[in-house]
Image (cartoon, rainbow, N blue to C red; front, side, top):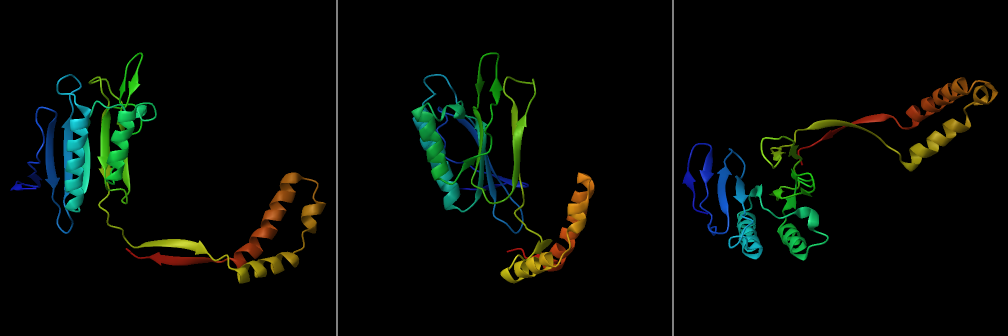
Length: 223
């Protein structure tokens, strides 16, 4: 990709067939990490510019290029291909399978265009950033006949965190059984009130449980 520098991002003149789709690609730049390639695409749905095969081939070439440069890619837009038909339409099924084979997954899985008689998922967001946590969704509005879609990707930086765990080793389980064997549950059996019996059981059970499986603090590293 040949880069023309700008402030905060780089325009990417990726080779796209203009008569088959309209697109804009930029690369977001951040210090200390690889760039994120973001592409917005519109695929016409009327002849003669509605050739799905040509569009799919071009899209896959772009994804291959992004993967070759080991960058995060986010490709979105009005593709005019209803993903909800993946189980009944061979072309749609092939479209999704080919994209997934490039390591890109769809983030929008519900209808984005709804009328009185139809509901279609034609506004797509794909990303190869499948490890980092992300938030994506659909913004329901009546500004246009399509709902808005969005994705928020995390920076990928994981801070050290404190977690708490218990060890259920064989030795600790044996200790727990010994404590239970030595516990007097007579107050549970003698109680005429179910609530009182339950509370007595929980109190008698919790004490040996805490002794046998104490909580430990674990520090998780960035790795």
